[in-house]
Figure 1: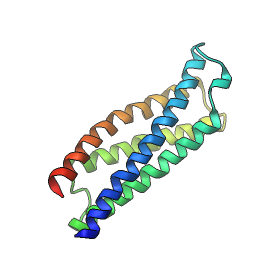
Figure 2: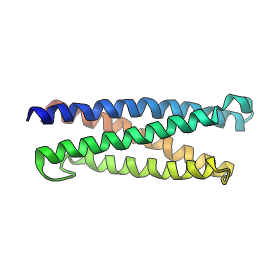
Figure 3: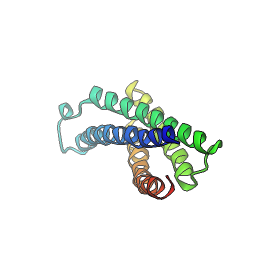
Length: 145
């Protein structure tokens, strides 16, 4: 049981690092949005840095999710037993995966401004679910462990 608690607290720590990386990537992406609206220069958007932080975010998000699933499987022997927290995690991973695919097209120069807006809208809206997920995770750790 003690090993599980260590794994259970490792999950949110990795997720917090992912969120910090994702918020920073989103901040950098916001600079592109401002530039496209005439509110900044092209040099304001650090394209490579945005991609690096986005990749870091996505990798940490998956690692943290796998740790969370592993901890839950270790405790319960099944998957998706944390209810809404688990189902929302699947939705979040799906939305960010779509965002990454769109970002990949953009990074290869195969996207339009509309695709960039879609990429941004999906990723930014997924962070709304991340906020709900944080609350659910704190409740889960507080009351169920």
